[in-house]
Length: 221
Image (tube, rainbow, N blue to C red; front, side, top):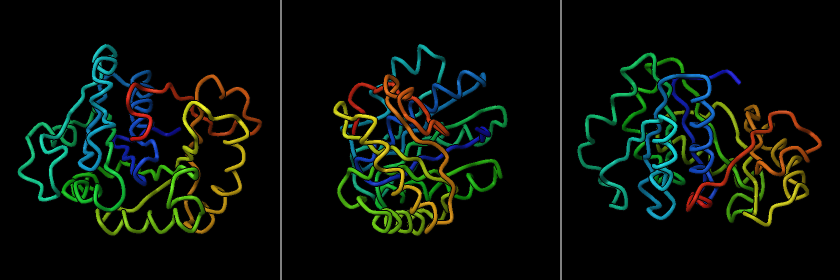
């Protein structure tokens, strides 16, 4: 995987993007000295990157949280530390964005800074077992709503389809045709298929498999 200075994870509410973001930041840390994760989820206060603060700190990853979490969408002035990662060229940042177009409003505030780096990727996290993204067409509609809300465009797709701890390899592999269709109708590549670590070796098509460790209280983020 070609690491980018900025990696943005967006998706439908409950797609599991927070868990993906935390795991991705931990993976980045294996290759880069300076890694930070920005929690911009103003939609869901219950499944937050902050729940993994201890693990992130122990691994030397800077966690930057917004002060307006769980408030309304009339976003107040953002603290200066939220902008710092964009000014450090040696820093690799992961951005966890709130679900749907409502959450993407917060990302819109940062859109010019993200684009200015010219070294970013914005990934759509899809879980085909969640309501409103059970077909490629439904998922594409959510994608377009998010893009319109934040004025940034997706560059790839993350297949994070799961049913929590009950997930089996069959649950994952059954979504391969769906994500292939989503890639076709969106003209975007599949960047990774996230799989719970203990299942990752069982997936027959292991291309782009990204093993996940389930984080405390972020299963639905």
